[in-house]
Image (cartoon, rainbow, N blue to C red):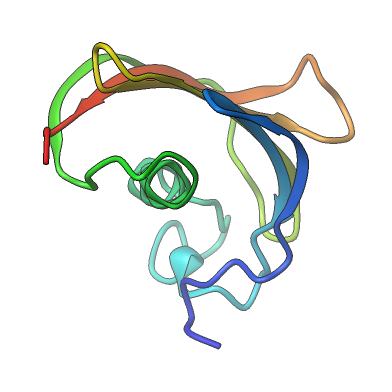
Length: 120
């Protein structure tokens, strides 16, 4: 297992342009290393790594980003939190809208936004 791996991802729903996943970022993940050592949290760059990774996996978009239309980080993701992620792919714009929130509390949104991938 690589330290950035997510091996517990579950597909909640999926169609040609949308996927909803649930997973846990384990406390052992090196995503948490060095980022607020006294208060571990998944940094924004770690969240976006997961967003771009799953966008490539499910929609085959490039991991290269041409633009970020909107991005908001609203609440910290703590170690071992169960997270839901929704990705909506717009093939015409080659863009992905994303939202991450707590599986335990749908009102607790961790992050949301839209990015356009580099066209392959």
